[in-house]
Image (tube, rainbow, N blue to C red):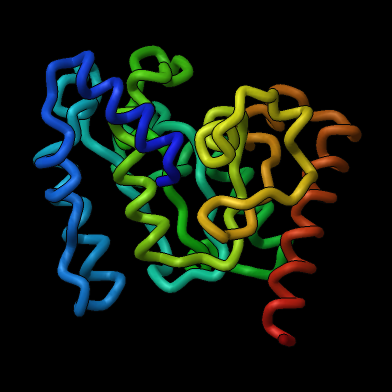
Length: 224
């Protein structure tokens, strides 16, 4: 989490009457353990301490993340949907099926990548997460990223892209252009749910162009 995002979280915590520092300390996992174990520890810490998810209502279970803890490629969305809420796994509904198709087309399997959302619990009626909710839950995503240490992040949709890049620009402005989060290359692109709602030749071509850039970046990194 960069300085701007940390400041936002701190300001929100103060407004909510929450002491920020103990929460930050609770995010620490055992550094000498492997990434898989650290992610499991972080998931438990999240469920015990996340201000947003402890206060939120209307969801079945938290949805932390899934995939290869040593992944070169990480996909980040905004929040679980109805099917994800039931299964406890990110991207398993219709948008998840579309994401699986994209991953396969890139020459990989779902098990090769790591998948997570900013929010770990489903917002009621699948609404877009608020800035306050993101500020409370995002530190756990930042820690997930730090543990996995991917070479490339694909930010799916506006909320994920705006959080990672500290911007208010829309996804049509952001997509297709390389950006950076904590030294990690970030490719903003459409959320698979948006692709399903706007399934045109233009949107499909644009998203595939974004993924081709990602594949080229990963291939270049492997050769250097």
